[in-house]
Image 1 (spheres, helix red, strand yellow):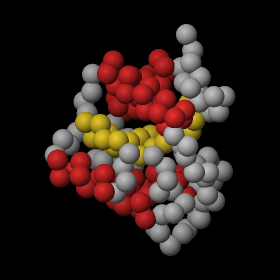
Image 2 (cartoon, one colour):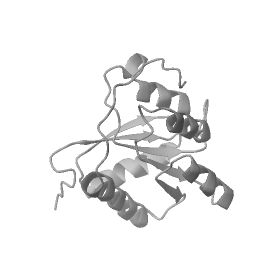
Image 3 (cartoon, rainbow, N blue to C red):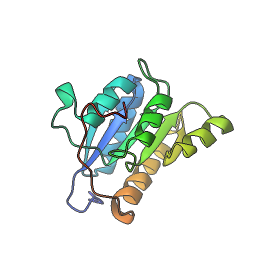
Length: 159
């Protein structure tokens, strides 16, 4: 059975993850749920920021409706990405789900202060992960009214 919880709209999801197995797990999770999702993938924080700003090869790419963010990334870690997103009015409304191996209370508190929307500790049992992806997708795309996307400011001062 195919459920379209996005009500005819394809949800744009940005996965920021450098672990190939976690990328495959996330892709498989969305396929299993059969949501109308276009999953974009970048491998590090710098590429994430370039994607969000529509720079270079990401010019014309859609602003994501949801970001799935690993913290342990090369070139720019997820902490710095969260700080940049939180400070940028063109993207700080985008829900960010942190996917990380850290279960430290101090990390959880710091990330929620930076406006992360959810915090998931990896590794996660696949069936539970699929359920969480489904719950997150349903929540963000059917229950919550998000603000309309603002124009991207390529090369903005918030870099």
